[in-house]
Image (cartoon, rainbow, N blue to C red; front, side, top):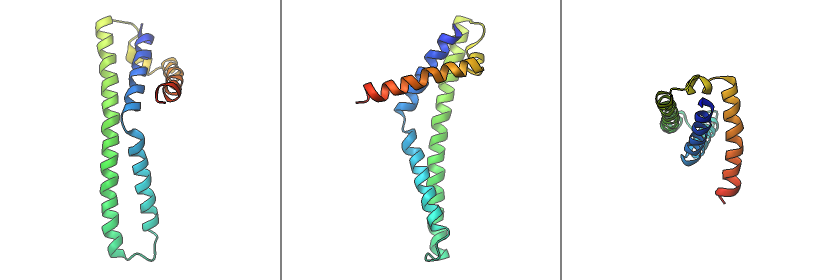
Length: 126
């Protein structure tokens, strides 16, 4: 029963990741990091302007990183909460949390998530 709960929680987590803007936030972090990599070694830009620009870039990096952290924590809390609730209601042994953290559980989650993401990408999101 815990494997069924793990499969359902995997589908729930995949929907969570597909619906929230993870990729745009990650792209924003990469874009800002690339800008920093271009500004920092530049001999054309004065140190005064580098200080101003890098402070702004640092704030944008921190903001986007915190948003990503909140998204990940939200997913972990959702999955952990549902797993705990499923274990309490159904009283399964082994628990869903132990299945999720075991090697067979991780293989099951990968085996479910990859085809599900491909299905969503090719058939649902068109």
